Each structure stands twice: as structure tokens, then as C-alpha cells.
Amino acid sequence: MNKLDFDNPIRQQTFSLTDLVEAQLEGCFGPGLKDLMSMAEIFDARKIILTGCGDSYGAAIAMAPVIEKYCDCFGVQAMRTVEFTRFLSKADIGIGEPNSPLVIAISAGGGTARICEALEKANQVGAFSILLTNNGESRAAKVAKRVYVVGTPPFPNDHPGLRSYFGSLVGLIAFASRMGHVRGTLPPTGPAQFKKAITDYVKSYEGVMEQIDDQMFALAQRWKGFERFDFIGDDVEYGSAFFGAAKFLECNGCTVSVDDSEDWCHINYFIKQPQTIGTVFMADRHAASFGRVVESVNSAHRIGRPVLVVTNADADVFDEGVEVCRLPDTPEGYEWLMPLMDYAPASILAGYITTLKGEPFFRRALLPDGTPDPANPFANRECYTMSTSKVEIYE
Image 1 (cartoon, rainbow, N blue to C red):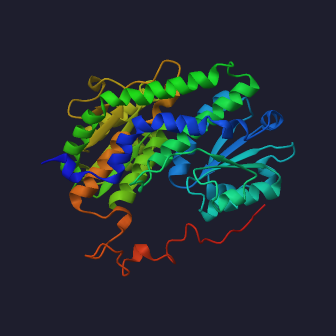
Image 2: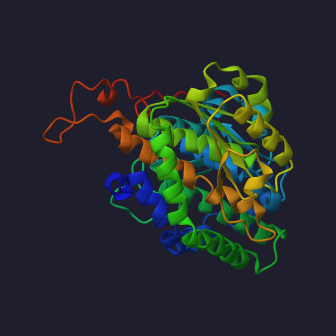
Image 3: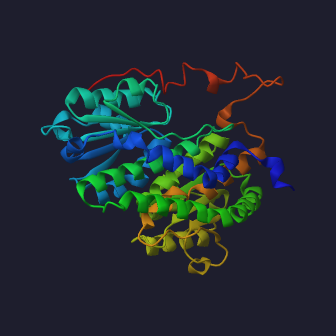
């Protein structure tokens, strides 16, 4: 079986990342970042809230600790957008100082109603609102106080989105470097060092991407009959697990669950018919919980789960029989870069399983002439309310 017969948009985007990195760095670290906030505004920020929907929420989780590490503020919180807009009161947001808190809403397209709602609420209660996006002319861009366009170049097949996720991740790292440079947590050479570390890490995948691709194609042939999948990751790796689960669901419409290594043992461990549940662990050997992840991986394997571990650790750390996809390690001192690329194997796997099954991406069933099927309920815009949901401001 020739894997190229099952090429697909998600695989093409994943392979493009090693070429994309230079242009993405130029877009994210360019003049738009320097002009985004004045030095006084940067010093004003005492608290930062990151929010987004779908993939963007995963990006917020993955990069919140990086921003907190370098921004010298009183906390960085990644929040689901609806939690921020509907359940976080003005009193709890911490209004009182100028230009603080800083609310960064992440949305590649900028058309989501809840993103607009988050920005409107931030403005109304007196926070400093920024939209991190790839569309500076979007609906949300017209609401935000400032707009940070990350400049991800167009791509022929960019749905389901993956390059956009990469752009959001690099944008958040670049923002952290700017804040750190101004506020003194990084030396003057800090942003340049960040750019080099990002380039080195992403380019390190050039030598292994074909190997990862071959491994995921072989695994897809074994897993294509599964309809249930578990994704497990801790801390920033939860963001990567969340993104991988999202790609599986968007691509082939399966049932997915996302958890951390401890709660998985308390809850999803007990799902019946374990041999029918594809189980993906994100395992960073540098993480404080790595030992717990190893225990959870081996537990899943011993109860009969088909297990894939995406890791920078050696395969012999895990039980024999566990499928291990070994990734390049991060540059020393930049261990937090792992979520920038570690979602690649699961994304490739999602694409291959989908094409092997003949499933339409996003359930976009087509008629024989290639036009959308009007009887497909997933195409009903009255049901698909991400952009049409009513905006309501709760203080």
C-alpha cells in the first residue's frame, strides 16, 4: 500500500512546518510586535488572561507557562472563552490599575462570536484587549484595542487548521520574548536567542519527518477501525493532547476524550473494551510528572489498550509492546518548546485514518459532482453557530 495514495491536507500542513518556520518567525517577530504595545503599556500589565476556542484554547494552555516565565507579572491564566465572558466577574478580573489585566484573545480567523464577546467584555470592564490572529480585517479585529497579526502565509489545503495553530504558538512565544525584553527578564539578545532556538528545534524535524510519517501510516492501518480515542497529557502537554484530539474529531468524527495522566487512572482507565480504544500519551521526559506518565502508559498497555506514546524519551522507558514515536529533543534551556511540534505525529495519524476510512473532513459530504450535499446536517449554518451565536456582555 502506497502512503502517498492517502495524502491529505493535515499531512501536507505538518510537512510544511519545517519550511514555514522562517516566514512565521518573520511575521511574529516583525515590526507589528514592537508596535503592538508601548513600553509604558507593557510595564502596566500586572496580570494576563489568555483565551480562545478550539485549537486556540490548546495554544493558550501550551504557552501560558512560557509567558508567565518571562513576563514578570502576577500570573498568566489560560481560560476557556465562555468562562471568561459569562462567568468571570469584573471584580474577579482585577480591574483597578491602568492597562491591566491584559486580555489576549487568540483566533486565527477572527470571526468567532465568543472571541468578539471576550474582546468586547475586556474593553467594557477596562482591561487591555489584544487579538492574536492571522486576519487583521476580521470581525474581532474591529473590536480589539490592539491587533497582533502573526502573518502565517496562505497554503493550498489548510483545513483542518494546523499551520494556523503553529502560527498562534510562535506568536505567543514572540509576545513572551517582547515582554521579557522590555521588563528585564531577558537580555537584549533574548528575542534573537528565542528565534534561533525555535528554528533549530523545528528544523530538527527535517531528518525524522519521513520516519514519523511511515510509522503513523503503518499505525493508521491498524487503528482505522477504532471509533474511540483517549489523549493524555500533563501541563503544557495537555494543550498538545487537546489539539491532537481536536484533529481526530475534525478529521473523522470519532469520539475523543482528553485527560491528564493522574485523572486518566481515576476515570477513563475503567472504560470497557480497552482493546478498541486508541490511546495517545504526550510524554515530555523533562516534565516533573514524567514518572507518572510512564506509569499511566504501562497501565493502559497492561489492560489491553493500543497505546501510542509521543515522546523525547527512549523507547525502553516504557513496557515492551508500547508504540513509541520518538521526537527530537528540545534545545537545552528551551524545554518549553516541545509543544511547538509534538502534535505532529497525532495530526498525521488523524489524516491517514480519515483517508483510509474514506471519511470527509469536517463531515463535509459531497455530491458526485463535488459540490456540498445540502442534505448534510453538518452544513446547516443554523446549527453551526460559532459565528452566529448572540454576543452578550456580563460584568
